[in-house]
Image 1: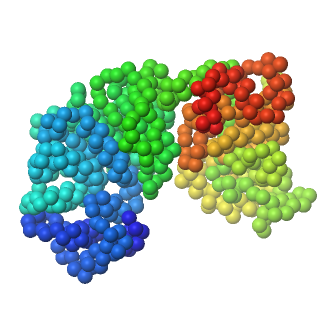
Image 2: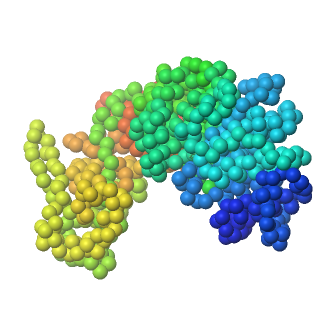
Image 3: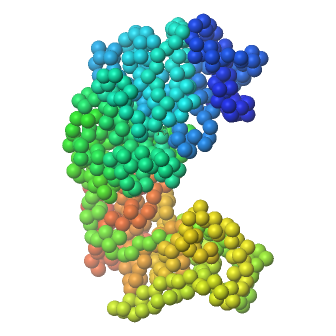
Length: 633
Ligand SMILES: C[S@@+](CC[C@H](N)C(=O)[O-])C[C@H]1O[C@@H](n2cnc3c(N)ncnc32)[C@H](O)[C@@H]1O
């Protein structure tokens, strides 16, 4: 849809009744639809200014050349108040995905049953899925739309204007095929799906044959207390900080017919691995639901939002395995090539590792080699000040005692070196990328126990701080309001205003290999500066480890084998980036090497020879594995 059209609507009004009037008025005018009887549409366009409608119709003619149902749906979607896209998770589904979902859910029923299918969207938004379903039933049965709306279509949404628009959309669909009833009876409810009981609302309700939709994706931190309370009544979100889409699986399955019912959602794919979806994974695996996942990986499906999604199809008949395929949205209509993955091979607690069975075997094999990285070396997260722009700086000048930052002096003695692994690609960049951090802590406890020096950082006393480092104190004071506002003010009930926002990593000390939160390539950079702090990234700490072992570890981490492991087991982001969080790297097996093997790896400069050797070492050397590795790396 051309941006001038959305601009026109958005500047016109944020009153949705006025926007509806204009969209519907223009739709009827553009398509020469004569309206005689239908009350809903009459009320909708009542009082329309003909000049305004003609102007908008002309704009659509000029910029879009057509005005069909997809355009209508699109216009309803782009005029949703932006607040609702955050609090209600109103993101809308492209037609190809909707069509795939509707087609695949209908394909498990015989044509002769289409007449009586009971189909629901329990977060229906402006009714795009219900529109596709109604059209499908009409095409296959030739039932009247009036009858289809009464017998076959059920919808619900928490937002009143969404339900109103669903009714308008379905009515216009009927009108476009010549059905101009005075009133259509709809089963569309303005309700909260978390508490709505379909058995109470519908007489002789026997469950849905099909539930389709795009459940609201709202992160836990944006949910109201009331919503959280309602979520705690569902098994899959009884506790923890769950996102709103999670209970929509359980709700749909509760109201789905036992033997034949099918659920088909487009949803975020994070439930495979995320901590807050543990109970959902257990819910799926303990019931052994018949589950198929079409994973879009790092391909973006929704144009207006960066989300990682998948299509999930579920039936309640138990199966030992789930079906999984990674696909590109552009090839959605091609024949499916699912891999079967046994529920019992999946770890509900740690997260589901889903891939083709060949790749899964390779991943498991890599994890079995040697010792897991996380067991061999501590892997730690960097500092989190929650106000890096205040604490971290590049001095514009310096003298014996001070760094200069804009027009402030900062005492050198309160500063430490800091680096951001997210930016770092090689050792020779360290000096150029190092910054200074104001570090208002002192080493509190230093005890020698079993030859290990453990130290704990304590925040400087405010009076002492002011007296000893008056310039730095004065500088921080100019940012006091910003510092107190960190973390929405929450942490600073607990911490002093000049403390960092989190206490993590304050006392971390030692040689380390630094690496970023996410990247498109393996960057592992060694620093021998023991007191170098870091933020926005991770580090593998290397206590009492020889330079030789460090060099070998770097070779392994920069190998094709490691990146193959990450590409196939970590969380993907767009631009071929992958998460390197501790959880995704800690199980990588660091292989044991004998002296001869070590010498070989250290003596060859050829990356290819090292990779070949390591593939052999990890048991991935056979023809097939080699080709996979060639393809992905
Ligand atoms: C992603 S939109 C889905 C729209 C529609 N299925 C589509 O793709 O065209 C999510 C919808 O969920 C609705 N919603 C949010 N919380 C809800 C709740 N607790 N109960 C019912 N609907 C809810 C929002 O108002 C929004 O319309």
